[in-house]
Length: 171
Image (cartoon, rainbow, N blue to C red):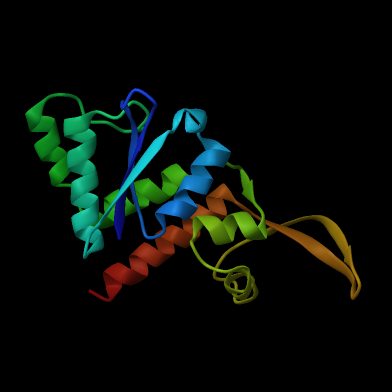
């Protein structure tokens, strides 16, 4: 797990985040972040566990005050301590919801990017009814007509909540 920081030409901290694949996340910022073109330097720090990376991200957001993090605690130490009490599942859910809030629907490749998996894995999830989708038209292939499928943001949230609940059940 990695913690990354994006800086502008003056060395001002633009954004702090954590990801399994920070370079893939950087590509997502290119698509969705109005401040992407200001990035001049990216610093990446490796952590041995996801929990450590999440804690480091929380601390960095609080102490370093990046310009574009969506949820930044105020400068009140007692509010930072309250943030520390948020469990990893809640913080992860917030992070995932933040990622998917940018699009009302997702294509196959967009889903693969957000979930950091492959297109065949997304198709498997669709086929097994683990991840919902809507049909938004027809595409034509050499094998004939195929439905054009998209997953809505709400379907993605539902899938992620189910994953979280399954993980909680296994603890």
